[in-house]
Image 1 (cartoon, rainbow, N blue to C red):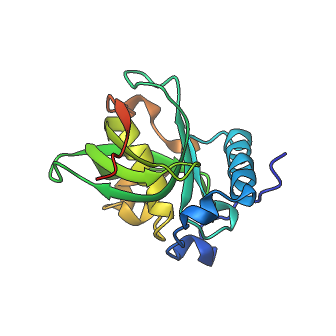
Image 2 (image 1 turned 60 degrees about the horizontal axis):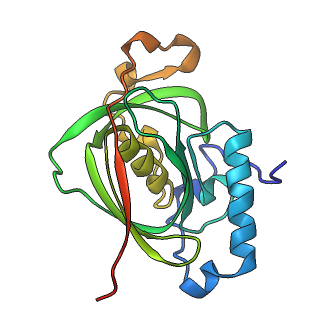
Length: 189
């Protein structure tokens, strides 16, 4: 058991901008232990990702893992700290059907940027960069949103058409945008 409790939509911590971590904080054993619990919680709750605010910790940390999604490259469990997102082609968007551990039993359609570059720190406080597209980009945008006080439901344009209970959702219209990724170390200049 992870020992972490999920916070649900309506909890004020989900609407706050989370604090960045210093490199010294990242390297503390407490941070490693927390990330281990966060990974366990993601697995217990069967999520594709989970962010620290979702378990009541207002820190800029999230975990993501992508497996067994058609036409999408698998991404092993990865820890992202202090993410900084940029979009090389901001006008290039796609429809993403999303669910969230903090918004249970609902699925919604939102627009996400197709291509994304994100700089972040890993669990060893190394500066990394991930370039990704499609489904992987949407997962990382979704999790990053949690660190800045947003939920996917905030991005729904037409709540009457684009939000549904999972039990009522027509999964035949679900399409995963093909996705790939590449992680590199950021070179010190």
